[in-house]
Image (cartoon, rainbow, N blue to C red; front, side, top):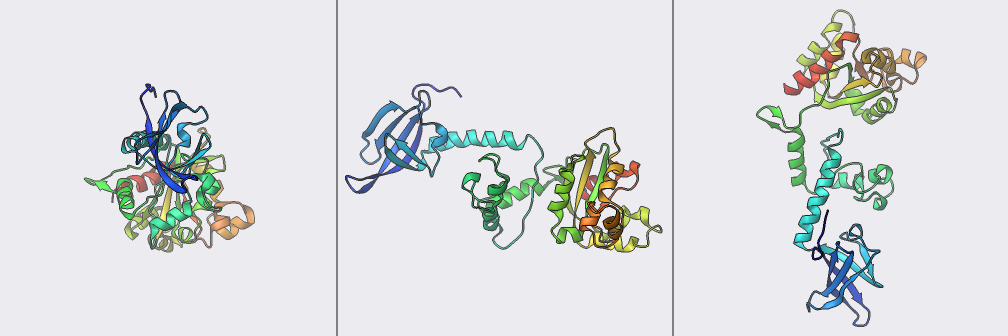
Amino acid sequence: MVYDYFDKYSFLCEMYDEDADEIKDLTLNYFPFDNSVQIIDAKKGKNVLKRVQLPPLNLDMLQIGNIVNIFSKLLYIKDCAPATRKTLFKNVQRIIIDYVTTGEVIGLELVAPDAVTKWRQCLGATDPTEAAPGTLRNLYGENKLKNVAHGCNTSEDAAKMLELFFGYEKGIPRVPFRATFKNCTCCVIKPHAVIEGNIGSILEQISTSGKFFISAMAMFSVKLANATEFFEVYKGVLPEYEAMCIHLAEGKCVVLEVTSTNLELNSVCEFRKMCGPRDPDLCRQLYPESIRALYGKSIVHNAVHCTDLPEDGELEVEYFFKLVAND
């Protein structure tokens, strides 16, 4: 951004005056053109410090809540002028938008009493360096921009965000699913695995394997009619068919479009190896590190469904992301 000599950002500050034993309200003007500052007594409107260059100071240091050292005087920044707020917010908003649109993001609706407050406590402070130990931003954040996740400040903001991500307009999702339907396989994390809190572990196992990437993901409440239709190929083949349908319809499931990182390999065949055989007990004997060995309980509660036939990958993904999603 190009500045001229008179461009400035104005901040409302407090400074403890030892001589007068009082806190003074000051206005700090920062001129980015030549990195100079001016301090004005907010009540008297007189210069406390005429405009002078201060090379060590930069705009990143002038954040609300920070304390800055101006020629050995400690100024606490408590707010900024409306024009400054508008300009800075516009710049920050543009930076955030540019960042979050560089790749896929995951939108979640979290439900709990006082969910907004609890989620922000779980996230920690916006700046990961200031976040409390054990919070998500403390554990996984890099900086104020790459700080893991967004958290709304109020229930009203949360309602608007949920409508943006999960709302419909004229029967069409505001944010459409981004499934590719190309050389992919379908993975359904079953309701029991969702309830047992294994979504994150399963996603981590897939995404960190180096063999696959998750190109689409969504949570569904599947109707029994949809479950019986989806599993129809197993009717008369597997004795667990009816129980499989009932289980898929009795809770939330998470559906993934999974694609092999090696485009020369068939995603369906390769991903079946990661899931393991249908029976978790057999998995634990033959493939102890497979998904079903780690998180499966029985043939019905075997953690995940994965596409069986190489030619059915795209069809199963389409069933959820085109048919069920718009049902």
